[in-house]
Amino acid sequence: MTNDGPVQHGYPHLETVRASINALYKRLSYDTVHTFETSVAPVDVAFCDTDDLYLGAQRVARELVRHYRLPDARFVVSFREMTHAANVELTAGPEYFVELNDRFRTHRRDIGAALAHEVMHVYLHRLDLSFPGVRENEILTDTATTYLGAGWLLLDAYREDAASSQKLGYLTPEEFGYVLAKRSLVFGEDPSVWFTSAQAYTAYVKGMARARQDEQQPPLTAAGWAGRRRYAHDRRHAGPGPGPQPGVPYTFTPDGGGRLRVSFPCPTCHQRIRVPVRGRVRARCAVCRTVLECDT
Image (tube, rainbow, N blue to C red; front, top):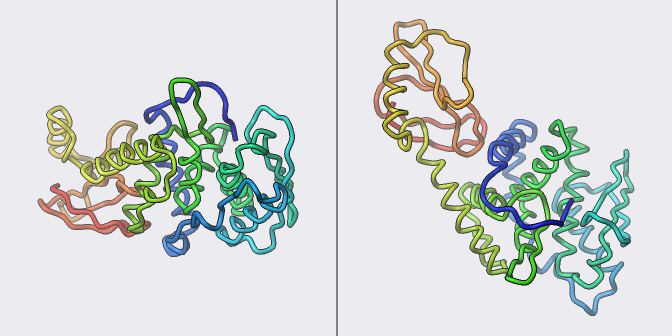
């Protein structure tokens, strides 16, 4: 986990974030993802300045192990001078060694955020779920941490003013807000009441606006004039085709009975949904169970 340089904003990693949510549903299943419907509670990861540094860090690590359901994982937490915010040694277990940056000795309120990311590394390691490339894999870890109920800590660690700034993780604040919003829309949980950082709340609001835009996408609601013209053209000349193409949200295929079907990505997990072309359609995603209503 890194924490250096100026804070980047916007949604530069959005496609990888969406692919990460999709990968979670595919690897864990809908039912398993929904066992994480309750987030880590602030009281369980609170860290008082009067707490013993090492005992407090071990307590928070145990709470995150419990949240991720890793009962046979033991974490040994230490502190040292380092460039990154934190690091974990991935081994066969059951004992794992986590190193935290020395600055957390005096910034104890953010120890839970750093440990949430590192414990998720272990969780994904045990699932054998990873993306190629260091940055893509770190984005997967940030996304999984957030979507499975501990990432609000990472967003709450974001603070920025005219003189200084701090952000943990690889996602931008708005991307953390986006994933939190996706989680909120699925589980009906409002994480904004836990934020101690005003900037974190602002990022969450922006992320929620972006997440709600996704619900208006399939397949033409927000396509614009050019997208609608392309849709009409492709519908008239539909054939078997090579499948989904980069930048094209929908694909037409004949169903063998003289009718057409259109496929497009689910706005929640981005699994492809295939429905008949017959006007107003109500469909349910087979992976995340999101119910969609759209005009085809």
